[in-house]
Length: 468
Figure 1 (cartoon, one colour):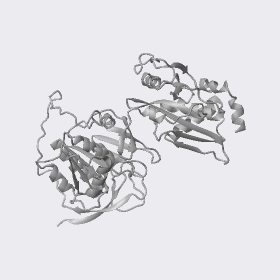
Figure 2 (cartoon, rainbow, N blue to C red):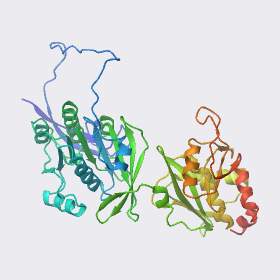
Figure 3 (tube, rainbow, N blue to C red):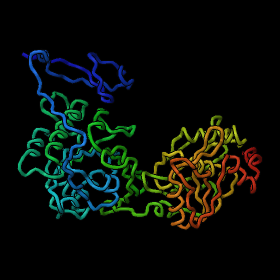
Figure 4 (spheres, helix red, strand yellow):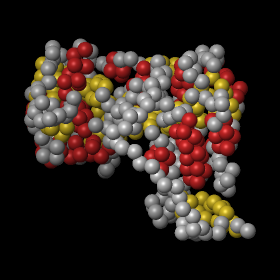
């Protein structure tokens, strides 16, 4: 007879320990060990039974290529790589209440026009899903609804004759496998549930959309292996105080990564934003110090956003550094380079940095725009009007070239900008020729001193910093 055995599984990394302790030995997380009871069966070796021989095929063989399932929601299809591939598994994570269920209900309603779609909710009752569908105006869409949490029941349905072409599981943390004696949402349950659902989806060619909860650190809850098991990982981001929502692709086996789709949350659901640059710059004010327009890239899409900085005298012994929408480590590096290499005194001042619109910028090309915003706030001199700025700053204060310069300039010219402050174009394999500036006047700089000199023409930075 099998005996029960208790073990402790880390909810962060999935590591197993025989005894409870406050800290996981595998990943170092605190208070993450949860007790799970498993049936201890008699050990079975591989010596007696033989496995089935694997048949190998050549790499150049032909395979049947199934057409993608296009949702006709352009922003979603862009992030997915042009549509959903049959048999693919997509994991969508995001903060609570950000709009994951709303997005997937709109997606399935569009797909149901040409495909059999099913929506399985493990968190809400059917009436709640119907109320959301009525609010979104998709109540008449032929989407099949169910409220279930048993993976065994869902797998049986997926193997039936009337199996759906597209299946949404909302959410994977509420699913459970009855063969495992642990609560839904634990590492073992999430891993086993995802494995069973993915196995059937691959075999039957079903598009599987999984909703994933996130932790307080912003990562998808459950074992990290879950993101390796699926084909595509999407994050739905946004600030609650802003109506903008960003669908960001961080993994995609069938399309580009780091692609984004921009949506606007309205009373009737999520609306596509076809020109996000114009939307993010809609409330921008000209001739204001501390503001700079950054010409960035998100995947293959150029995107213009406003970076705002405020440098103020610090009333405390330790100045504050507050950052929203950018990496605080890169801000510390930019301020250190300005002080050590250019003689700009910022050590005694509070520095606040914000990316307007709730967007999160991660590329190093924003270094030069951040430096321009800081210098503008410090001197009280606005950045030259109708100008965009981009470029990477090195530790020796050199300005390094960045990729996709031509796309950035083209987007800026389309929105009416007249000048670009940028590094000299790269002449390597990345950019084999100088970018075409169109109607933009290019101000190329090699060193951060050149940027500081633009503001020194109007105001003495040293005197201003001394007064601060």
